[in-house]
Length: 508
Image 1 (cartoon, helix red, strand yellow):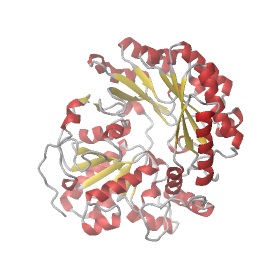
Image 2 (cartoon, one colour):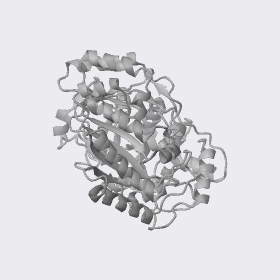
Image 3 (tube, helix red, strand yellow):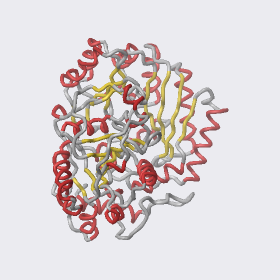
Image 4 (cartoon, helix red, strand yellow):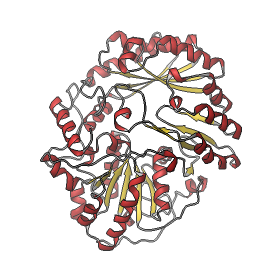
C-alpha cells in the first residue's frame, strides 16, 4: 500500500475558513485521512445539510476528514490545504445525475481514475459514494465506486470507519471491501455485481433512520460564502406523505419521519447570540411538518429570522407568510408544475389556478413582493395549449396577485421508483420547440413582463440516460454519452432490466 503521509499546507481556502462559524466543538485532525468531495462549488456544497452532517459525524468519530469542492482550489482541502494525493480514502456526496459528470471531471484533473478496476490496478485511493442518488439507483455507480452507502448514512459510519482503520493497518484492498460488504447497507460492485448478473439475491437494504431526534440535524458550519449566506440549516423531516407521480421521494426515501419541534428549538438556542444569522428549515415540504405552528412560534420568540424552501400552494397560509416577512424575506417559491388544473391533477397535485391566485394574493397583501414558479414541460399528456397555459398562469399571477414573477421550466425525466417510471420522455427536438415557444410567450406574449429560466434539453437527456444506468456485464464508459437529438433514450427493455436488477439488489 502506498505511503499516504503528507504535511498540511495552508492555501487560499483560508479566506473561506476564516469566515465560517463552527457551531459544535468537534475534534480536528484524526485518523485516517479522508477526503470528502462535494461535486459543486464551495458556495453550493456548503448549502447541503446532508454533506455537513456526515462530515460532523465522521469528525465526532475521530476521522481526519477534510472537504473538497469543484471550482477554485479544487485540488486542495479546505481544512489544511493538503493535496488530494495525501488521502487514501475519498468519498463523494452525489445528489443528482449530472453530478457524476462533475466527479469524473474532477478525478481526471486529480490524476485519479474514475474506474474502481483501474484504481485497484494502480493502487489509487478507495472511493465511496453516498447521497440522495443512492436511494434511487445505486447501480449507476457500478463501474465507478469501490462501495456505495445505501440510504441514510449516519448509522453506517461506525462500520465504515472501523473497517477503514483496519485497512490502514493491513493494506489489503479486497479484505477491506469484504469487510464493508458485511453491512447490509453497503453495496460493493466488485462483489455484488456478479451476483446480480446471475440473478442471485444480494439482500442489500437502504438504511432508513426512524427517530430523527437521535441523529444530528443541523449545520456544523454557518458559511457566509454559501448560496444561503449566514444561514444555519435545520432538518424538519425526511420522506413525504404526498404521491406526486413524477417524484422519487415517496417511494425511495422511506416513510415520513419528523424531528420534534422541541429538539429543533434546542438546536437553535445557541444561534441567539450570533449577529446576523438566520435559520433555514430543510424538508421535502415544510408546510406538511406537523409541529410547524409551534416551531414558528418558538423561532419568533428567539428573534431569529427564518426561511423555507419551496412550498406547496395549498400549504401557504398567513402564519407562514408572516414568519417570512418578519424575517425580511419577500420572495416565495412554489411549484405548480403545470399551467392548468387538468395537467396538474395528472401530476398528483390537487390545487387549482384559482387556488394559486388566492394564496399568492394573500401573500402579496402581507408583504411578499416576488414569486418563483417551477414548471415542467414534457409531462405525459401535455399538448401545445398546455404549454401556452404556463405563460397565461404567470401573467395572472403578475397582474392579479401583483407579484414579480420568475418562471423556471424544467423537462420531465421519468425516474426509477416513481409512478411514471415507464412513461416516455419527450425528445430533445420536441422539448426544444416547446421551450422556444415559451420564450416567445414570455418576450412578446401574455407573459411579457415575467422572467423565465429554462433547462437545456441536452442536460435533461443526459440525466435520463444516467438515471436508467444498470449492469450490462460488459466493460464500457463510466458515463453514457447521452442521446442523439430525437432518439428515444433508454429503451423499455433496458428500463425493465434495471428495475429487475434493483429488485435483486434489494430495492423494491
